[in-house]
Image 1: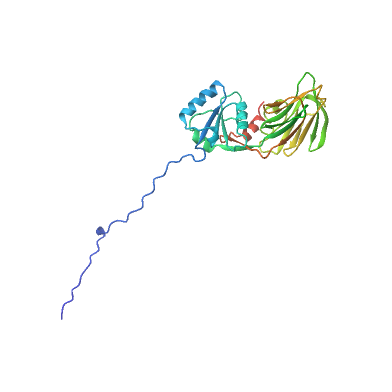
Image 2: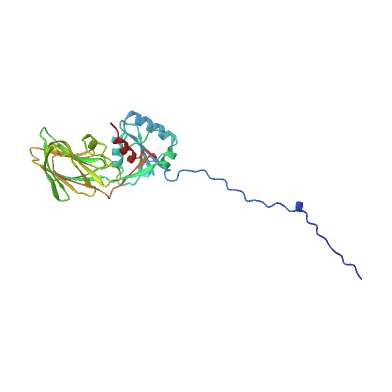
Length: 287
């Protein structure tokens, strides 16, 4: 009988190559995606111009028409100019204070600009639309982010009739003038005229007299933001009045229509914890 040949296989763990683990992908550096294209604009003030030159050397920049965000250097007046210049463009504006007041601006700091922009909070503002008619019958349209104001043009007090939503609410106001302010503008001229401070986002407008003579005890009113306001000038020939939408003035008006314009939206950017809501709240406890 033939012998059976048997083969034996000896298993040795040393002969088996170890299983390879997949390498972890190298993390990509985090870069700004929302605000890669920055435009810088500045007021003519010396500090603002110096900051503009330094920022342009430090960061790549484009023109405002090509930008994802606009960095404005100056004060509140320049911020209003910048907002008006970017009417309905939808480009957010981040202000840094190189002016005198800076209520609508962030603190000035040139370091880590991209990180500040990425972490900033957006605030949407709707302006007022002013339609004024002058003594020649011409119509003038203006946009106001802060307020629409009517002022006497001579030594004589203005006489005004005020209607809200088609109903006369004040037959005759004798005063230096009257203004209608947005929440954003309620801490500006409106506050100086003893008007109320309105939180951002509140559906309200402030109607505030300027140095009222009659009626003596009338201190203004809070109106719904949807209200349509009509102000008629009584005796415009002998008591001329001008109307101003922020910084655009129309002389010798006979009547002015004011309403909030929801077709226009401005976007302001603020550092966390320092947005307009917080600033308006703080302003009410300043004494």
